[in-house]
Amino acid sequence: MKKILTIILSMTLLFSAMSAIVYAEEPTDDVAFYKARITATTVTHTVKYIPDNGEELSIKINIHSSRSVSVSIYKDDELITDGLCIKGNDSYTYTYSGADNKTCEFEIRIHDITNDGSPVDAEIIPSQKRTYSSWASTFINEAINQNKIPAELQNNYSSNIIREDFCRIAYCFIDKYIDKTKTKSSFADTDIVGINALANNGIINGKRNDTFAPNDNILREEAAAILERMAQKMSVTRATAFTKTYADESSISPYAISAVQNMTRLHIMGGKDNNNFCPKDLLTKEEAIATLVRLAAIAEWGCAK
Image 1 (cartoon, rainbow, N blue to C red):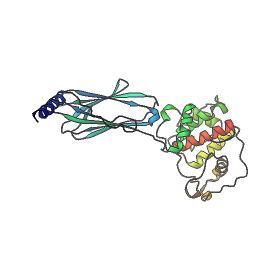
Image 2 (cartoon, helix red, strand yellow):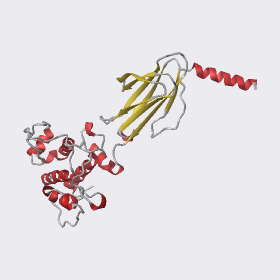
Image 3 (cartoon, helix red, strand yellow):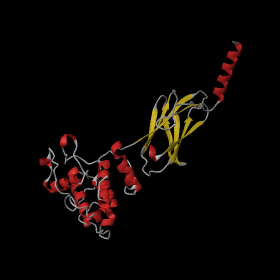
Image 4 (cartoon, rainbow, N blue to C red):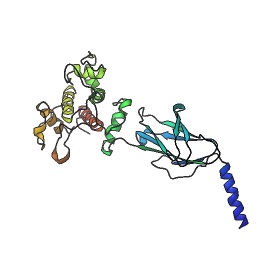
């Protein structure tokens, strides 16, 4: 019994002398789950961001002691957050959107402010998640591989897309089919070259008073009309023998009826729930990318993805 007690005491002294104790944990979503016990020094832990694991990286820091700590976060050795204070028994989550779509490393440094020698238990829980639906992965990956999505737009795919972002991506798909020298400023509220090129080639229109309203969301029927004009520039033959009817056809604006029909014939766009096209619904970024990839495939190969 004395021998056992001696071993236990020795182990206790060993652990109390260490600056940080790492507890082995099962990985979560291919990213390590890390625990440390801080005594009189700073604990440093590195988290690697890999784009293929998901666009958005979250790093949650939990403090399981009554004392406060300070946290510094470095991205590829560059300080991005310094002097952040997390109160005792509280937590903080840092989120990285993955805007540059490149592998990088985050170094998390946790420092015990009071430094009185008593332990502070901390957890670092990183996780990555995809910001797009599973059905959209093929379209998004193909568009990225073909350099069709600007790096700063490679995130938040399931969110609604604004008119500016839709047109910027659309321009990447159609630039070789149009006269790119036509970049005369067309709108009072944007000077983006791609948008002006689309306008000067008759693919997009403004809203009112010579404005484009770049930050407005885009409706599904508006997207259909733009895609129809793009198809004409890309010499995509209009499909014939339209047999598909939508339960909400009467709600499609007159200007978009022909476009909705043709985009449906070509399998570039389709209906939603209960056989409705939902023309006034907002288009998401992933939906926009899927339609553009399908259109490009027809223009290139004669069939949609």
